[in-house]
Image (cartoon, rainbow, N blue to C red):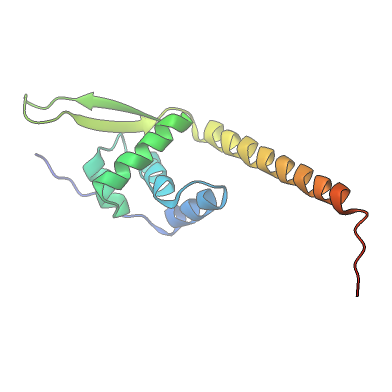
Length: 130
């Protein structure tokens, strides 16, 4: 098996992770997303090196990203040995993904705004006794 040097997450990558987690993405999922964005069709081993996340958590994060429609996986059998190696890539452009996130966040904001308005309606006749 060929091992190549994989860069580590830098300050910009960590800031992206922080922003994604603020929008509701699970932290490990955000880290794996950044790894897939930054690396060229990484496999799980490369994602592990980039993120310092173990394989089981990477598998969970990749499944979440696939379910979101952001990532796709391709498997390749190497020399008929062991399990096939999965390689990951973005399924959409970064701009499309950011637009998806923006729409999701806006739906949450709209929902919370409606909840607050309803709360005001339900409590408008409440009298505070001192």
